[in-house]
Length: 489
Ligand code: NAD
Image 1 (cartoon, helix red, strand yellow):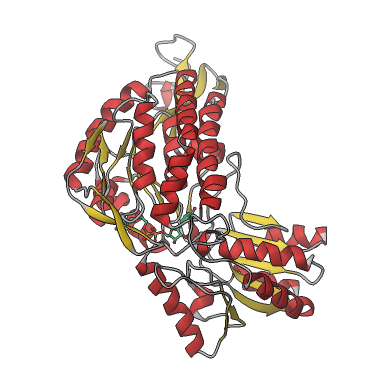
Image 2 (image 1 turned 120 degrees about the horizontal axis):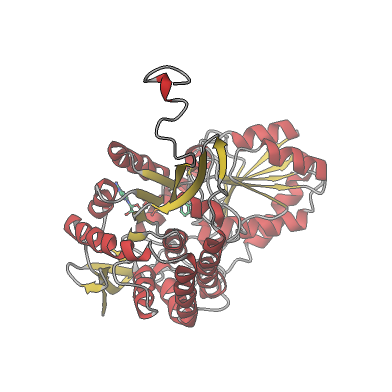
Protein backbone atom coordinates (compact mmCIF):
# COMPACT_ATOMS: atom_id res chain seq x y z
CA UNK A 1 0.00 0.00 0.00
CA UNK A 2 1.50 3.39 -0.94
CA UNK A 3 2.39 5.73 1.92
CA UNK A 4 2.14 9.43 1.01
CA UNK A 5 4.60 11.69 2.85
CA UNK A 6 4.40 15.32 3.90
CA UNK A 7 6.55 17.72 1.88
CA UNK A 8 8.57 19.99 4.15
CA UNK A 9 11.52 22.03 2.92
CA UNK A 10 11.73 19.81 -0.15
CA UNK A 11 12.00 16.64 1.99
CA UNK A 12 9.52 13.79 2.00
CA UNK A 13 8.62 13.38 5.66
CA UNK A 14 6.98 10.04 6.41
CA UNK A 15 6.27 10.26 10.13
CA UNK A 16 2.90 9.14 11.49
CA UNK A 17 0.29 7.27 9.52
CA UNK A 18 -3.38 7.60 8.79
CA UNK A 19 -5.53 5.46 6.49
CA UNK A 20 -6.86 6.92 3.26
CA UNK A 21 -10.19 5.46 2.11
CA UNK A 22 -11.59 5.02 -1.38
CA UNK A 23 -15.15 6.42 -1.05
CA UNK A 24 -16.38 4.18 -3.86
CA UNK A 25 -15.55 1.01 -1.90
CA UNK A 26 -15.23 2.20 1.70
CA UNK A 27 -11.86 0.43 1.80
CA UNK A 28 -8.39 1.66 2.73
CA UNK A 29 -6.10 1.98 -0.32
CA UNK A 30 -3.20 4.17 0.93
CA UNK A 31 -1.79 5.77 4.04
CA UNK A 32 -0.65 9.32 4.63
CA UNK A 33 1.78 10.87 7.10
CA UNK A 34 0.25 12.48 10.16
CA UNK A 35 1.77 15.86 11.00
CA UNK A 36 1.95 17.81 14.25
CA UNK A 37 2.48 21.41 15.33
CA UNK A 38 6.26 20.73 15.29
CA UNK A 39 6.02 19.86 11.57
CA UNK A 40 4.22 23.15 10.94
CA UNK A 41 7.06 24.97 12.67
CA UNK A 42 9.68 23.22 10.51
CA UNK A 43 7.65 24.00 7.41
CA UNK A 44 7.44 27.69 8.31
CA UNK A 45 11.22 27.87 8.82
CA UNK A 46 11.76 26.28 5.40
CA UNK A 47 9.16 28.57 3.82
CA UNK A 48 10.77 31.72 5.24
CA UNK A 49 14.15 30.74 3.83
CA UNK A 50 12.74 29.94 0.39
CA UNK A 51 10.57 33.06 0.27
CA UNK A 52 13.39 35.54 0.70
CA UNK A 53 14.97 34.44 -2.60
CA UNK A 54 11.72 33.72 -4.44
CA UNK A 55 10.20 37.07 -3.48
CA UNK A 56 13.30 38.86 -4.82
CA UNK A 57 12.97 37.37 -8.32
CA UNK A 58 11.66 39.59 -11.08
CA UNK A 59 8.04 39.05 -12.16
CA UNK A 60 9.31 37.58 -15.41
CA UNK A 61 11.52 35.04 -13.63
CA UNK A 62 8.73 33.93 -11.31
CA UNK A 63 6.33 33.73 -14.19
CA UNK A 64 8.67 31.53 -16.22
CA UNK A 65 9.20 29.14 -13.29
CA UNK A 66 5.43 28.85 -12.77
CA UNK A 67 4.81 28.32 -16.49
CA UNK A 68 7.27 25.40 -16.44
CA UNK A 69 5.47 24.04 -13.39
CA UNK A 70 2.11 24.29 -15.20
CA UNK A 71 3.56 22.31 -18.12
CA UNK A 72 4.81 19.63 -15.71
CA UNK A 73 1.39 19.44 -14.06
CA UNK A 74 -0.28 19.10 -17.44
CA UNK A 75 2.07 16.26 -18.33
CA UNK A 76 0.80 14.48 -15.18
CA UNK A 77 -2.90 15.00 -16.01
CA UNK A 78 -3.73 11.32 -16.28
CA UNK A 79 -2.05 10.41 -13.01
CA UNK A 80 -3.56 13.35 -11.10
CA UNK A 81 -7.07 12.85 -12.51
CA UNK A 82 -7.06 9.15 -11.61
CA UNK A 83 -5.68 9.84 -8.14
CA UNK A 84 -8.30 12.55 -7.48
CA UNK A 85 -11.05 10.15 -8.56
CA UNK A 86 -9.70 7.37 -6.35
CA UNK A 87 -9.28 9.58 -3.29
CA UNK A 88 -12.32 11.87 -3.53
CA UNK A 89 -14.79 9.63 -5.40
CA UNK A 90 -15.14 12.10 -8.26
CA UNK A 91 -15.92 10.69 -11.68
CA UNK A 92 -13.03 10.59 -14.12
CA UNK A 93 -15.36 12.50 -16.50
CA UNK A 94 -15.08 15.37 -14.02
CA UNK A 95 -11.41 15.10 -13.02
CA UNK A 96 -10.09 14.67 -16.59
CA UNK A 97 -12.26 17.41 -18.08
CA UNK A 98 -12.47 19.89 -15.24
CA UNK A 99 -10.55 19.55 -11.95
CA UNK A 100 -7.10 18.95 -13.43
CA UNK A 101 -7.16 21.05 -16.65
CA UNK A 102 -8.81 23.92 -14.77
CA UNK A 103 -6.08 23.72 -12.11
CA UNK A 104 -3.37 23.84 -14.80
CA UNK A 105 -5.10 26.85 -16.36
CA UNK A 106 -5.22 28.59 -12.96
CA UNK A 107 -1.44 28.20 -12.57
CA UNK A 108 -0.87 29.57 -16.10
CA UNK A 109 -3.23 32.48 -15.44
CA UNK A 110 -1.44 33.59 -12.25
CA UNK A 111 1.95 33.03 -13.90
CA UNK A 112 0.93 35.50 -16.60
CA UNK A 113 -1.12 38.07 -14.68
CA UNK A 114 1.67 38.76 -12.21
CA UNK A 115 3.62 40.39 -15.05
CA UNK A 116 0.81 42.91 -15.39
CA UNK A 117 0.98 43.78 -11.68
CA UNK A 118 1.89 47.39 -11.01
CA UNK A 119 1.79 50.09 -8.40
CA UNK A 120 0.21 53.36 -9.51
CA UNK A 121 2.58 55.57 -11.49
CA UNK A 122 4.54 58.04 -9.40
CA UNK A 123 3.10 61.52 -8.97
CA UNK A 124 3.25 64.59 -6.72
CA UNK A 125 0.15 64.16 -4.55
CA UNK A 126 1.68 66.61 -2.09
CA UNK A 127 3.90 69.46 -3.34
CA UNK A 128 7.58 68.61 -2.84
CA UNK A 129 7.10 64.84 -2.73
CA UNK A 130 6.88 62.11 -5.29
CA UNK A 131 4.83 59.09 -4.25
CA UNK A 132 4.52 55.64 -5.69
CA UNK A 133 3.05 52.34 -4.59
CA UNK A 134 4.74 48.96 -4.35
CA UNK A 135 2.98 45.64 -3.98
CA UNK A 136 5.04 43.47 -1.64
CA UNK A 137 4.60 39.77 -0.90
CA UNK A 138 3.20 39.01 2.53
CA UNK A 139 5.90 36.40 3.28
CA UNK A 140 4.68 33.00 4.41
CA UNK A 141 1.04 32.23 3.65
CA UNK A 142 -0.80 29.50 5.60
CA UNK A 143 -3.43 27.70 3.54
CA UNK A 144 -6.10 25.23 4.63
CA UNK A 145 -8.26 23.39 2.11
CA UNK A 146 -11.44 21.25 2.06
CA UNK A 147 -12.14 17.79 0.63
CA UNK A 148 -14.62 18.57 -2.13
CA UNK A 149 -12.18 19.88 -4.77
CA UNK A 150 -8.87 18.91 -3.16
CA UNK A 151 -6.42 19.82 -5.90
CA UNK A 152 -8.33 22.77 -7.34
CA UNK A 153 -8.75 24.44 -3.95
CA UNK A 154 -5.01 23.99 -3.24
CA UNK A 155 -4.19 25.58 -6.62
CA UNK A 156 -6.58 28.50 -6.03
CA UNK A 157 -4.40 29.38 -3.03
CA UNK A 158 -0.90 28.29 -4.00
CA UNK A 159 -0.86 29.77 -7.53
CA UNK A 160 -1.68 33.41 -6.62
CA UNK A 161 0.38 33.21 -3.42
CA UNK A 162 3.51 32.09 -5.32
CA UNK A 163 2.95 34.48 -8.21
CA UNK A 164 2.83 37.32 -5.69
CA UNK A 165 6.19 36.23 -4.26
CA UNK A 166 5.12 34.31 -1.15
CA UNK A 167 5.93 30.81 0.11
CA UNK A 168 3.14 28.52 1.34
CA UNK A 169 2.49 26.06 4.15
CA UNK A 170 -0.68 24.17 3.26
CA UNK A 171 -2.79 21.66 5.12
CA UNK A 172 -5.15 19.61 2.94
CA UNK A 173 -8.32 17.99 4.30
CA UNK A 174 -7.42 14.83 6.24
CA UNK A 175 -9.35 12.45 3.95
CA UNK A 176 -8.27 13.86 0.55
CA UNK A 177 -4.59 14.86 0.72
CA UNK A 178 -3.11 12.81 -2.12
CA UNK A 179 -3.23 15.08 -5.18
CA UNK A 180 -2.03 18.02 -3.07
CA UNK A 181 1.03 15.99 -2.05
CA UNK A 182 1.70 14.98 -5.66
CA UNK A 183 1.24 18.63 -6.69
CA UNK A 184 4.07 19.66 -4.34
CA UNK A 185 6.29 16.79 -5.53
CA UNK A 186 5.75 17.77 -9.16
CA UNK A 187 6.63 21.36 -8.25
CA UNK A 188 10.01 20.18 -6.96
CA UNK A 189 10.58 18.03 -10.04
CA UNK A 190 9.74 21.06 -12.22
CA UNK A 191 12.45 23.10 -10.50
CA UNK A 192 10.52 25.23 -8.00
CA UNK A 193 12.76 25.78 -4.96
CA UNK A 194 12.58 23.48 -1.93
CA UNK A 195 10.56 25.09 0.86
CA UNK A 196 8.36 27.16 -1.46
CA UNK A 197 5.40 24.75 -1.21
CA UNK A 198 5.17 22.81 2.05
CA UNK A 199 2.39 20.31 2.67
CA UNK A 200 1.71 19.33 6.27
CA UNK A 201 -0.97 16.66 6.49
CA UNK A 202 -3.08 16.12 9.57
CA UNK A 203 -6.10 17.30 11.40
CA UNK A 204 -7.21 20.18 13.61
CA UNK A 205 -3.89 20.34 15.52
CA UNK A 206 -2.02 21.12 12.28
CA UNK A 207 -4.67 23.59 11.10
CA UNK A 208 -4.68 25.50 14.39
CA UNK A 209 -0.85 25.55 14.49
CA UNK A 210 -0.87 27.19 11.05
CA UNK A 211 -3.45 29.78 12.14
CA UNK A 212 -1.54 30.75 15.27
CA UNK A 213 2.06 30.60 14.00
CA UNK A 214 3.69 34.01 14.53
CA UNK A 215 5.70 33.84 11.28
CA UNK A 216 2.71 33.19 9.05
CA UNK A 217 1.36 36.52 7.85
CA UNK A 218 -1.86 35.43 6.20
CA UNK A 219 -4.33 32.57 6.39
CA UNK A 220 -6.12 31.56 3.23
CA UNK A 221 -8.93 29.17 4.09
CA UNK A 222 -11.59 27.33 2.15
CA UNK A 223 -14.06 25.25 4.12
CA UNK A 224 -17.18 25.49 6.21
CA UNK A 225 -18.47 28.70 7.77
CA UNK A 226 -18.19 27.11 11.22
CA UNK A 227 -14.45 26.42 10.81
CA UNK A 228 -13.98 29.80 9.11
CA UNK A 229 -15.22 31.53 12.28
CA UNK A 230 -12.70 29.57 14.37
CA UNK A 231 -9.90 30.45 11.95
CA UNK A 232 -10.70 34.15 12.11
CA UNK A 233 -10.65 33.86 15.90
CA UNK A 234 -7.23 32.16 15.90
CA UNK A 235 -5.77 34.67 13.43
CA UNK A 236 -7.06 37.77 15.22
CA UNK A 237 -4.61 38.07 18.16
CA UNK A 238 -1.79 38.62 15.64
CA UNK A 239 -3.95 40.64 13.23
CA UNK A 240 -3.15 38.21 10.45
CA UNK A 241 -4.76 38.81 7.13
CA UNK A 242 -7.44 36.20 6.38
CA UNK A 243 -9.30 35.24 3.26
CA UNK A 244 -12.21 32.93 3.93
CA UNK A 245 -14.03 31.06 1.18
CA UNK A 246 -16.88 29.47 3.11
CA UNK A 247 -20.17 27.69 2.69
CA UNK A 248 -23.04 28.38 0.33
CA UNK A 249 -26.69 27.56 -0.24
CA UNK A 250 -27.25 28.84 -3.75
CA UNK A 251 -30.73 29.80 -4.92
CA UNK A 252 -31.79 28.94 -8.48
CA UNK A 253 -34.68 31.16 -9.59
CA UNK A 254 -36.84 29.99 -12.47
CA UNK A 255 -39.19 32.68 -13.81
CA UNK A 256 -42.34 31.92 -15.79
CA UNK A 257 -40.80 33.11 -19.06
CA UNK A 258 -37.67 30.91 -18.72
CA UNK A 259 -36.70 28.23 -21.21
CA UNK A 260 -37.88 25.34 -18.99
CA UNK A 261 -35.86 22.70 -20.83
CA UNK A 262 -32.68 24.78 -20.33
CA UNK A 263 -33.56 25.41 -16.68
CA UNK A 264 -34.15 21.70 -16.01
CA UNK A 265 -30.78 20.82 -17.54
CA UNK A 266 -29.12 23.66 -15.62
CA UNK A 267 -30.63 22.45 -12.35
CA UNK A 268 -29.35 18.95 -13.06
CA UNK A 269 -25.78 20.18 -13.48
CA UNK A 270 -26.09 22.76 -10.70
CA UNK A 271 -27.48 20.33 -8.13
CA UNK A 272 -25.62 17.11 -8.89
CA UNK A 273 -22.12 18.01 -10.14
CA UNK A 274 -19.55 16.44 -7.81
CA UNK A 275 -22.48 14.65 -6.12
CA UNK A 276 -23.74 18.03 -4.90
CA UNK A 277 -20.59 18.58 -2.82
CA UNK A 278 -20.04 22.03 -4.24
CA UNK A 279 -20.18 25.31 -2.35
CA UNK A 280 -21.96 26.93 -5.32
CA UNK A 281 -24.36 24.01 -5.93
CA UNK A 282 -27.94 24.86 -6.87
CA UNK A 283 -29.51 23.68 -3.65
CA UNK A 284 -32.58 25.90 -3.31
CA UNK A 285 -34.63 25.85 -6.49
CA UNK A 286 -37.51 28.37 -6.54
CA UNK A 287 -39.94 28.23 -9.45
CA UNK A 288 -42.69 30.69 -10.42
CA UNK A 289 -46.24 29.29 -10.01
CA UNK A 290 -47.11 29.24 -13.74
CA UNK A 291 -44.25 26.85 -14.63
CA UNK A 292 -43.77 25.04 -11.33
CA UNK A 293 -45.41 21.75 -12.37
CA UNK A 294 -43.77 21.67 -15.80
CA UNK A 295 -40.32 22.37 -14.34
CA UNK A 296 -40.64 19.82 -11.52
CA UNK A 297 -41.85 17.14 -13.90
CA UNK A 298 -38.96 17.64 -16.36
CA UNK A 299 -36.32 18.05 -13.63
CA UNK A 300 -37.51 14.81 -11.96
CA UNK A 301 -37.52 12.99 -15.30
CA UNK A 302 -33.91 14.04 -16.00
CA UNK A 303 -32.82 13.35 -12.39
CA UNK A 304 -34.03 9.77 -12.78
CA UNK A 305 -31.60 9.35 -15.68
CA UNK A 306 -28.52 10.32 -13.64
CA UNK A 307 -26.21 7.31 -13.39
CA UNK A 308 -24.67 6.89 -9.94
CA UNK A 309 -21.78 4.45 -9.73
CA UNK A 310 -18.12 3.62 -10.25
CA UNK A 311 -16.25 6.92 -10.72
CA UNK A 312 -13.91 5.21 -13.21
CA UNK A 313 -16.73 4.11 -15.52
CA UNK A 314 -17.14 6.55 -18.43
CA UNK A 315 -20.93 6.09 -18.24
CA UNK A 316 -21.14 7.24 -14.62
CA UNK A 317 -22.56 10.72 -13.99
CA UNK A 318 -21.92 11.01 -10.27
CA UNK A 319 -19.75 9.05 -7.86
CA UNK A 320 -20.04 8.50 -4.11
CA UNK A 321 -19.99 11.12 -1.40
CA UNK A 322 -16.53 11.74 -0.08
CA UNK A 323 -16.78 9.96 3.30
CA UNK A 324 -18.98 7.91 5.62
CA UNK A 325 -19.42 11.03 7.76
CA UNK A 326 -20.74 12.99 4.79
CA UNK A 327 -23.06 10.13 3.81
CA UNK A 328 -24.50 9.99 7.34
CA UNK A 329 -25.01 13.76 7.31
CA UNK A 330 -26.85 13.77 3.98
CA UNK A 331 -29.02 10.79 4.98
CA UNK A 332 -29.84 12.60 8.22
CA UNK A 333 -31.21 15.68 6.40
CA UNK A 334 -33.37 13.55 4.10
CA UNK A 335 -34.72 11.47 7.00
CA UNK A 336 -35.54 14.62 8.94
CA UNK A 337 -37.37 16.09 5.92
CA UNK A 338 -39.40 12.86 5.58
CA UNK A 339 -40.35 13.00 9.24
CA UNK A 340 -41.53 16.59 8.73
CA UNK A 341 -43.87 15.36 6.00
CA UNK A 342 -41.86 16.71 3.05
CA UNK A 343 -42.35 14.80 -0.22
CA UNK A 344 -39.07 13.03 -1.09
CA UNK A 345 -38.39 11.90 -4.67
CA UNK A 346 -35.53 9.37 -4.75
CA UNK A 347 -34.28 9.35 -8.31
CA UNK A 348 -31.93 6.40 -8.84
CA UNK A 349 -30.44 3.19 -7.58
CA UNK A 350 -27.01 3.24 -5.96
CA UNK A 351 -24.33 0.56 -5.47
CA UNK A 352 -24.55 -1.20 -2.10
CA UNK A 353 -20.85 -0.75 -1.23
CA UNK A 354 -19.22 2.66 -0.77
CA UNK A 355 -20.64 6.04 0.26
CA UNK A 356 -23.18 6.49 -2.54
CA UNK A 357 -26.33 8.59 -2.28
CA UNK A 358 -28.89 9.01 -5.08
CA UNK A 359 -30.15 12.29 -6.54
CA UNK A 360 -33.04 13.16 -4.24
CA UNK A 361 -35.52 16.00 -4.66
CA UNK A 362 -37.26 17.49 -1.61
CA UNK A 363 -40.56 18.97 -2.75
CA UNK A 364 -41.88 22.16 -1.18
CA UNK A 365 -40.36 22.01 2.33
CA UNK A 366 -41.04 25.00 4.61
CA UNK A 367 -38.59 27.89 4.07
CA UNK A 368 -37.31 27.49 7.63
CA UNK A 369 -36.73 23.70 7.38
CA UNK A 370 -33.10 22.60 7.98
CA UNK A 371 -32.93 21.17 4.44
CA UNK A 372 -33.62 24.68 3.06
CA UNK A 373 -31.45 26.59 5.55
CA UNK A 374 -28.34 24.39 6.00
CA UNK A 375 -25.64 23.22 3.63
CA UNK A 376 -26.46 19.55 3.00
CA UNK A 377 -23.54 18.99 0.60
CA UNK A 378 -25.07 16.10 -1.27
CA UNK A 379 -27.25 15.63 -4.39
CA UNK A 380 -30.35 16.86 -2.54
CA UNK A 381 -31.97 20.04 -3.93
CA UNK A 382 -35.19 21.50 -2.58
CA UNK A 383 -37.85 22.79 -5.01
CA UNK A 384 -40.28 25.50 -3.89
CA UNK A 385 -42.74 27.93 -5.47
CA UNK A 386 -42.86 31.70 -5.72
CA UNK A 387 -45.45 34.09 -7.15
CA UNK A 388 -43.78 37.45 -7.76
CA UNK A 389 -40.33 38.79 -8.57
CA UNK A 390 -40.26 40.51 -5.19
CA UNK A 391 -41.00 37.24 -3.40
CA UNK A 392 -38.32 35.39 -5.40
CA UNK A 393 -35.69 37.94 -4.34
CA UNK A 394 -36.83 37.81 -0.72
CA UNK A 395 -36.70 33.98 -0.59
CA UNK A 396 -33.33 33.84 -2.36
CA UNK A 397 -31.70 36.36 -0.01
CA UNK A 398 -33.26 34.73 3.06
CA UNK A 399 -30.02 32.94 4.09
CA UNK A 400 -26.85 33.79 6.02
CA UNK A 401 -24.89 32.57 2.98
CA UNK A 402 -24.03 34.65 -0.08
CA UNK A 403 -21.76 32.73 -2.41
CA UNK A 404 -23.62 32.17 -5.68
CA UNK A 405 -27.07 32.26 -7.29
CA UNK A 406 -28.66 31.89 -10.70
CA UNK A 407 -31.56 33.53 -12.50
CA UNK A 408 -33.48 31.82 -15.30
CA UNK A 409 -35.48 34.17 -17.50
CA UNK A 410 -35.58 35.31 -21.12
CA UNK A 411 -36.56 38.83 -20.04
CA UNK A 412 -33.44 40.98 -20.00
CA UNK A 413 -34.93 43.61 -17.68
CA UNK A 414 -35.90 40.94 -15.14
CA UNK A 415 -32.40 39.40 -15.35
CA UNK A 416 -30.79 42.80 -14.74
CA UNK A 417 -33.11 43.75 -11.85
CA UNK A 418 -32.85 40.42 -10.07
CA UNK A 419 -29.08 40.00 -10.48
CA UNK A 420 -28.62 43.46 -8.95
CA UNK A 421 -30.89 42.65 -5.99
CA UNK A 422 -29.37 39.27 -5.11
CA UNK A 423 -26.78 39.34 -2.32
CA UNK A 424 -24.32 36.79 -3.68
CA UNK A 425 -20.74 36.96 -4.97
CA UNK A 426 -21.49 35.30 -8.32
CA UNK A 427 -24.77 35.48 -10.24
CA UNK A 428 -25.34 33.42 -13.37
CA UNK A 429 -28.11 34.21 -15.83
CA UNK A 430 -29.41 31.12 -17.64
CA UNK A 431 -26.64 28.85 -16.38
CA UNK A 432 -25.21 27.67 -13.08
CA UNK A 433 -21.64 26.73 -12.00
CA UNK A 434 -19.04 27.95 -14.53
CA UNK A 435 -16.12 29.97 -13.16
CA UNK A 436 -13.06 31.28 -14.99
CA UNK A 437 -9.49 32.08 -13.95
CA UNK A 438 -9.86 35.74 -15.00
CA UNK A 439 -12.86 36.66 -12.84
CA UNK A 440 -13.29 36.64 -9.05
CA UNK A 441 -15.07 34.09 -6.90
CA UNK A 442 -15.95 34.82 -3.29
CA UNK A 443 -18.79 35.27 -0.89
CA UNK A 444 -21.06 37.94 0.51
CA UNK A 445 -22.31 37.66 4.12
CA UNK A 446 -21.24 34.47 5.94
CA UNK A 447 -19.87 32.92 2.76
CA UNK A 448 -16.61 34.67 3.43
CA UNK A 449 -14.23 37.53 2.86
CA UNK A 450 -11.77 38.02 0.02
CA UNK A 451 -11.66 36.57 -3.47
CA UNK A 452 -10.23 33.51 -5.18
CA UNK A 453 -9.30 33.61 -8.89
CA UNK A 454 -8.55 36.74 -10.98
CA UNK A 455 -6.24 39.67 -10.28
CA UNK A 456 -8.35 40.38 -7.19
CA UNK A 457 -6.95 37.14 -5.70
CA UNK A 458 -3.42 38.19 -6.61
CA UNK A 459 -4.00 41.40 -4.65
CA UNK A 460 -5.12 39.40 -1.60
CA UNK A 461 -1.64 37.88 -1.43
CA UNK A 462 0.21 41.20 -1.57
CA UNK A 463 0.46 44.15 0.76
CA UNK A 464 0.43 47.69 -0.58
CA UNK A 465 3.28 49.97 0.41
CA UNK A 466 3.32 53.73 -0.14
CA UNK A 467 6.81 55.14 -0.76
CA UNK A 468 6.96 58.97 -0.44
CA UNK A 469 10.14 60.73 -1.52
CA UNK A 470 11.15 64.30 -0.76
CA UNK A 471 12.14 66.00 -4.00
CA UNK A 472 13.09 69.46 -2.59
CA UNK A 473 16.24 68.61 -0.63
CA UNK A 474 15.13 71.24 1.95
CA UNK A 475 16.50 70.57 5.44
CA UNK A 476 13.56 72.32 7.07
CA UNK A 477 10.36 71.79 5.10
CA UNK A 478 7.86 74.63 4.87
CA UNK A 479 5.24 72.73 6.88
CA UNK A 480 7.50 71.88 9.86
CA UNK A 481 6.27 74.97 11.74
CA UNK A 482 3.17 73.01 12.77
CA UNK A 483 5.41 71.34 15.36
CA UNK A 484 8.51 73.54 15.59
CA UNK A 485 9.11 77.27 15.13
CA UNK A 486 7.10 79.79 13.13
CA UNK A 487 5.55 79.73 9.69
CA UNK A 488 7.87 81.14 6.99
CA UNK A 489 11.08 80.94 9.10
P1 NAD B 1 -14.22 22.03 7.07
O1 NAD B 1 -14.42 23.43 7.51
O2 NAD B 1 -14.73 20.95 7.92
O3 NAD B 1 -12.67 21.73 6.87
C1 NAD B 1 -11.87 22.49 5.98
C2 NAD B 1 -10.43 22.36 6.39
O4 NAD B 1 -10.25 22.97 7.67
C3 NAD B 1 -9.92 20.93 6.54
O5 NAD B 1 -8.60 20.85 6.06
C4 NAD B 1 -9.98 20.72 8.05
O6 NAD B 1 -9.11 19.71 8.51
C5 NAD B 1 -9.56 22.09 8.54
N1 NAD B 1 -9.96 22.40 9.92
C6 NAD B 1 -11.00 21.92 10.64
N2 NAD B 1 -11.05 22.49 11.86
C7 NAD B 1 -10.01 23.37 11.91
C8 NAD B 1 -9.53 24.28 12.90
N3 NAD B 1 -10.13 24.39 14.10
N4 NAD B 1 -8.45 25.02 12.62
C9 NAD B 1 -7.83 24.94 11.42
N5 NAD B 1 -8.23 24.08 10.43
C10 NAD B 1 -9.32 23.31 10.68
O7 NAD B 1 -14.81 21.96 5.59
P2 NAD B 1 -14.96 20.67 4.67
O8 NAD B 1 -16.09 19.85 5.23
O9 NAD B 1 -13.63 20.03 4.47
O10 NAD B 1 -15.38 21.29 3.25
C11 NAD B 1 -16.68 21.57 2.90
C12 NAD B 1 -16.98 23.03 3.15
O11 NAD B 1 -16.11 23.83 2.33
C13 NAD B 1 -18.37 23.42 2.75
O12 NAD B 1 -18.90 24.29 3.73
C14 NAD B 1 -18.18 24.18 1.43
O13 NAD B 1 -19.20 25.10 1.13
C15 NAD B 1 -16.88 24.84 1.67
N6 NAD B 1 -16.25 25.22 0.39
C16 NAD B 1 -16.25 26.55 0.04
C17 NAD B 1 -15.70 26.94 -1.18
C18 NAD B 1 -15.69 28.39 -1.59
O14 NAD B 1 -15.04 28.72 -2.58
N7 NAD B 1 -16.37 29.28 -0.87
C19 NAD B 1 -15.13 25.99 -2.03
C20 NAD B 1 -15.14 24.67 -1.63
C21 NAD B 1 -15.70 24.29 -0.40
